[in-house]
Image (cartoon, rainbow, N blue to C red; front, side, top):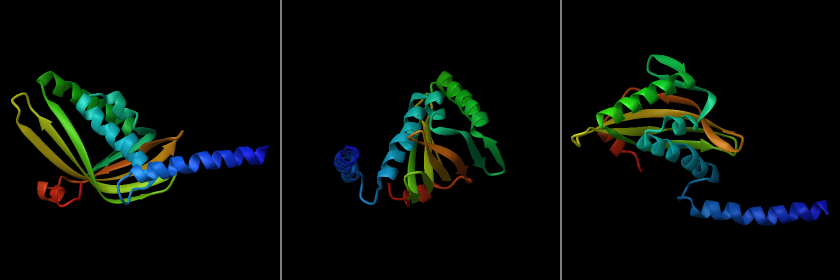
Length: 167
């Protein structure tokens, strides 16, 4: 009976994994597709919604944010980003963030990614200002969910650097 249960589980799960990989862009692993959905798309949506709680859910409880000149626990950085969101909302500003990657190394439990994000703020008059920030991220699966363990942001780059990366 145990053998039948195991075989049934394999027969059911193999098509599901194959389908997930078939729906992913070329060169994308199932882990990469899950990271895109659970982390990068979730962060992008949280920025648009100005929802710091949704953004916080994408970080490991012990995550670290590294910027030029300092490191800080994400749990200390997120409240500041939340205040920034509230200030932007009060000013009538909106924002978006998009990600592009130069390297993605992952397996079923860990991932390391390098690339850049483009953070764009649109003020109340409709004027858009974009910031292009090279970054690295170390991610882990925690309770069947991908989360950022370390986010490293480098000094700002140019729009040309962003345009040189494949979307």
